[in-house]
Image (cartoon, rainbow, N blue to C red; front, side):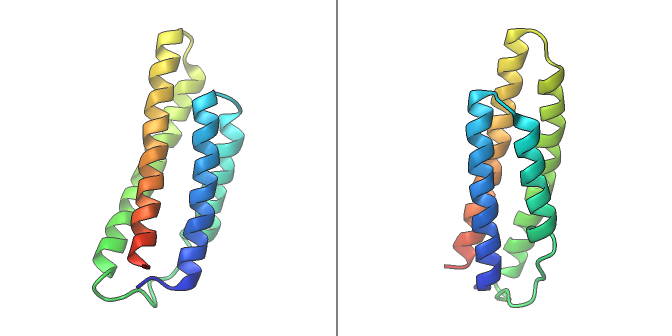
Length: 117
């Protein structure tokens, strides 16, 4: 079982990811929204302790945390590539890749929130 504070912070971060997803789909103002998502992750998610997490759920939680961190770094790199892209085909490909990463992050959030159910 996941503590209530964990659920609250992950729901908040999931909402921020949904806003980022909308921006990626529209291709507008990505750096501002990504900075907000990254800041929320650093302030609310990284600081959460493992105390209160059910012993049986702890390995899955840690695995999801690792994947979130990895995917967030990949998203950051791909956003830089998107910003540098000039050709329309390249922009579309980078946009699709960024969207895929954001969707993965949302899925990881959902999986963690399901640990709390």
